[in-house]
View 1 (spheres, rainbow, N blue to C red):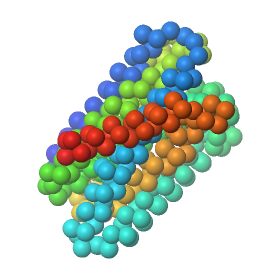
View 2: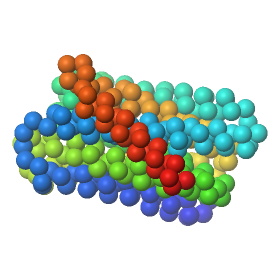
View 3: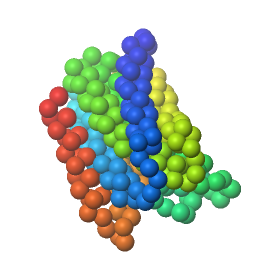
Length: 265
């Protein structure tokens, strides 16, 4: 394998990591207070972008790649999707963590403070994002496909945009709980480091195996949609069972990512 897939992957994933840092820097601009509604909007927006990215940037290309490799589409697409869901489910149940809008820890009963549990939850959330960038870059370079090049750049742009409110949604709660603005910014930024790491691992594992690309693309989609359904959508609705702001932001994120895919591909 040449260095080109890793370079493309690093460039794309470091861009999304930088957007996380940008979002985390909002802690220097926004004071303390109840930002529940802001967090709901940020999480809903992220959910919408990730749903659209899963469909337009991963599942549809997986179907196209399976067809071009003369594979029956149902096997790699559905099989890879289910494997991605199971992979994230196992990680979710194996690691102690706590979501942003909840007070009850999940996973194994290990004594960690709230902030450590929150950090682990965000790390789990960022793994699928890194996987989808790495696999998409591997497909683009292995197949020398202009369409997959465009898909990789669109994925990076869309995920980078959603990482801005996500970074803010991580750093602001730390500041509200007594950390300094600098400490909150650092913690919010570091929470995104799993993304480039997962991306590089994904591209190394898949770039030299053409047959695995449809499986890997749908695997990434399954992992990402698991995060959306298990974490982001419920938290965007943490307002006596329903939140108009969360719902509208989900739709807004989906429309934005869909528009990017249509307009730039």
